[in-house]
Length: 280
Image 1 (tube, rainbow, N blue to C red):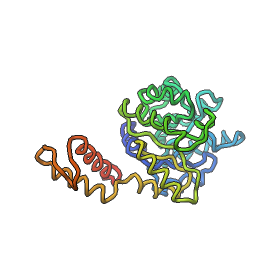
Image 2: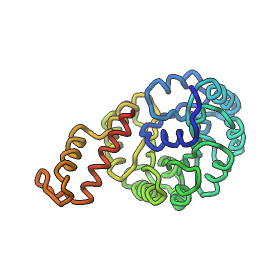
Image 3: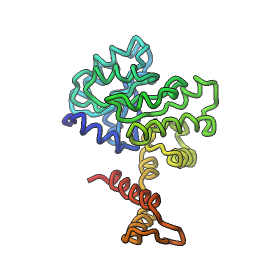
């Protein structure tokens, strides 16, 4: 698979909703992950790889990205002794779509990766410091999206990783992304692998607060996630009826509700999102 230019990669990442993790030391799973239809495969060189397999994982990832594979790669935090080794192993590989930076805390951490790698950067916010610097991270040159690691964040602040406890951080990332002109952030993983209802609830809550994608840890989560972020036929129909009714530019009523400028903007956004997820 031919490599993408940075602008092309940025377009892919901005519209993606499903980001599927695969361990970096399991090269037999790389192509299988790509075959799931996930928008972005994220090969993990951080938490998913035990210490004694770090070098072999880097070699496997480099071989895959040099021979036609394409993926984003999560690298270790800038404070890790493995950070620069990860980046060195990924340099100039044609299949490298983006670098996801683990435990991104400050603008300088993201900026240092962006300055070394000619691909988009996704800071993974996993701490109180990262949430506090969310806007600076989002506004860093080369950053294309924010992602939220809510499990590590909960551990950092001594909280349970429940939706009420994590709502403030999620909202901070949403606001920071909007101010920086980025798409909505990518939400953290759902660890319940066999319960579609739990995943459905997490996806619904994510959309309600403005998150626009999700990190996934199992292929069976891909289709449900993509369907959840795709506007329903009812929503698309509503949007079209609103735009048709408001053709004259004046406030009107549709299904008993007033339609004014904010409602028109929401209808237009629904149709744009429907086009984004359906592809060319």
